[in-house]
Structures are given as C-alpha cells and as structure tokens.
Length: 336
Image (cartoon, rainbow, N blue to C red; front, side):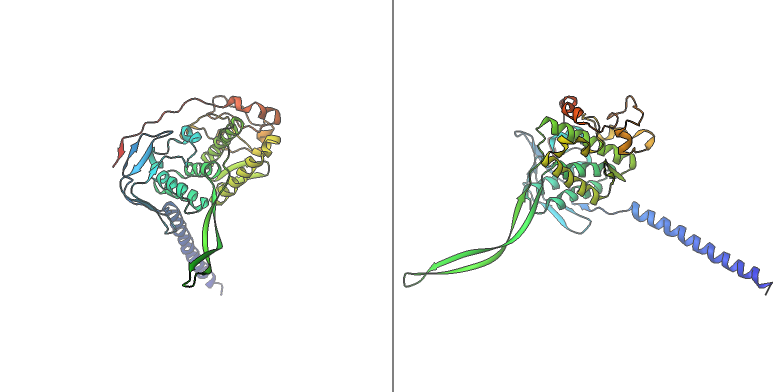
C-alpha cells in the first residue's frame, strides 16, 4: 500500500492539470464569445440626399434600408422616407453629435422612422437604437449613454390592443335595414408626455444629469450608470430602462424641484462632447454620500466639472450655469 500512494498522487495531479487546462480553454472561449457578441446587421446604405427644410434639414432615402436586430426581427424603412433626426433630442446634438454624423447615422435613420410611425413600442424602438449603434461599431459605454438619453428624453408611447364593435348596416328589399355588430381587435398608440426641455430649469438638470451618466459609464466601461441616494445603478440595459422610466416620472411630478437630491449626482450643465468628458479621477466612481459631503478633491480643469448633489438653494440658480452656445454641423449633399 505504501508504494501505491505516490502513483495515485501522480494520477490525481495529471487529472487536476487536465481540468485546469480545460478551465483555461473554457475561459478563453467565454471571452471570445463575449468579444464576438452579435448586435444585428444593416442592409447596404442608407442612400439618399439631404433636403433643406424648416426647422431642420431632412434626409430622404433613395432606396430601401433595413436592420435585422439580434433577435431576428427586421426593421425596414422604405424608399422615399424622410427623417430629420428629431428622435434624438436636439438639446443633446452638441454633446453626442448630430444624428446624421459618423457611426450614429444608420441607427438614427431606423430610429427616426419608427419613432414617427410608432408601429412598434417605444421600448423596442429605443433598444433597437442601442443595438444599431453597437452593430455599427459605437463603443458600449457611449451607446449606453445615448440609449439612456433617448429613453429618458426622447418620444415615449405604448401600443394598446382592445376589442371594438363595428356596426355595419345595409338596406333590405322592404325598406328596412339589417345591421350587424362586428367585434374586432384594433391596436392604438398611446403617447406619453415628454420632458419639457424648453424649461430652463429642466434643461439644466437634464444636461447635467446626462453628463454625469456619461462620466459614470465611461469610467466603468459601461458597468455603472447612475449614483442615487438609494445606491449605485448598474449599466445593464434593464437598469437603463428602469432608470429612464423613473427619471421621466420624476420630471413629470416635479418632485426634484422640492428635493433636488433625488436627481442623484449630476455634473455641470455644459455642452461637452462625449469623447471629451473626463472619467472620474483615478478611475474610481465615488459614492453618492461622498459627493454630497464634498468628500472628493475638487479637481481643477476636470472636463465636466466635479460631482454635484444639488441643495434646494443651489437648484434655484442652477439654470444660470447652463451653456447655451450655438452648435455647428456640416451635412453632405447626399449619401451613396
């Protein structure tokens, strides 16, 4: 028995080594799968031309354009469709770029069309905007920031299906009428009130909040979305959607005007390009409590400023810090 133990130990060691190797290979497989995450595919295009219009230029498609999302659902936009980028609130064009610029263009065309037709829910339309950006190479943290912006400040609606009774009558040979009540299913669009970004106080808060969301996502590479009195909000798509819904409700009730700390951590309401906004110092996202207590070093020159938790007194004058400088865009005459 004594001489058998070394052989058994060697056998166990070999098995352990094989298992370890398999684990390493499996780990690489998971990493490769994550790196190759599929977000969907666009058709060729979009092809079309820009048309001068008031209040903003229109882009008219000269051929069909579509996107197949990662769930296999096609999002088609027909030839002749005109879109204007309005599904991305114009307030944020100076921050995220114009809707027809760079890697956003394809996703913006699809998003615009379905925000106009409202043939699918706002939830699905906005999430598809995220998928489209990712499919076209927009980094994850930036696509999440833009997804949060349209889900929070963009158009919102639901589709409701109900049964209605349609009355059909026809004359009889004897002068009377025969009528039938025909029940049928119909789908109606129920639009929801958008946040009023023409109100200076609401606009200042909206821009400051978006800048903070962008900084959190950039610092964490998309893992952390928001810092609220109730805690840290993750950057998952589900959390983005819930956070956006809660923000809409808060703006609708104006609760934040009475208790501004409900907004969580915000930044200065300045027009800052997404790529230019600084991450949190040392790559560390602070806690809500630290920001509220001003426990962070007040770093000079930080693009976006230091974190802010507004007091009622500070909120009253916050719109005076709003950046209202003009934003310039250059549009090509057409796209091939």
